[in-house]
Length: 365
Image 1 (cartoon, rainbow, N blue to C red):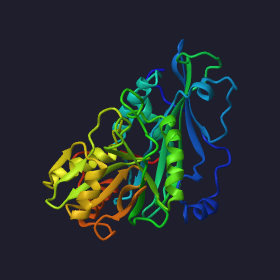
Image 2 (cartoon, helix red, strand yellow):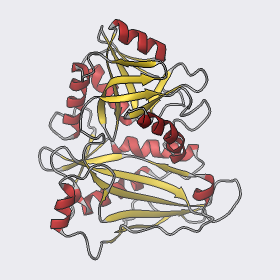
Image 3 (tube, one colour):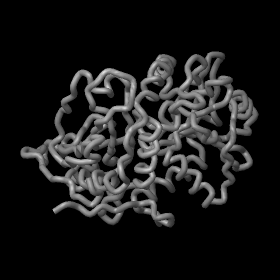
Image 4 (spheres, rainbow, N blue to C red):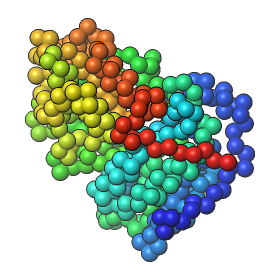
């Protein structure tokens, strides 16, 4: 498929009535209120990318021997469309999502989706389902994903794939909204190891984290924190978010990227905004023992996690096998609040977009 070839538009014959949609948008929660449409594009070794369609959201049909079901060739992204302060619609750094999607594809031996096609698909879906973007603090969460569809049994890269984009109206990621979360430090499980798929956004990474996340929930926590696989010493990331530590001298520390940590777009944005505020940011290893000792001494004043879904969330309490400790007084700190408010203001078009991060989308006719 030529990147400039338009996506065939096949709108839903019976979209959700306005009144029913408005009722769902009153309290959408997260990840359960889906829009009327989706985009699908096929790839084969013989034809490349072709058969691009925007059509009614519907169940997908798969052969039981489809490679994704057996060998887990699957990747995805997470991104949001926002209502901007001037009434427009904007995506936040979608080119970065396209680039990471391509890197994930390469790691999983899948064909990369050209950036133009990736953005074209996102834009088409947002235009047709723009009325699903909630007002207030809500947004439209977009889920581009790709999976192997070739029917065969045998360990090799598939020769057929489907790229798909769906969307859902969302509110706050954590129950109760923007309040400090409690995390559980896992001693028993690792998220990724050197040479593995930690830097790829693939479903297998998340599947492997679910048991540890269930353990965290059983301990009364919102999220799990993973340590490195080799020594079980160094803090890496949460189950679905990157992590930052705010020191008493104003320095911001975050674990370095090195193949085991997902290169978060929100993480990169936080680093850039912090440096704009003349905050020193250090990307360096930071151990759990340091975190615990520095919190006890008051050297660590704040800890927060960040990601597309939750944006920035303060960590108020840390639980582990040998006990628990609060970060500061357990509430959101001023640096966390300042960074979150600034980032959200940029995302929603309230603050100046000095770095041209907002990608505007014109509404459909």
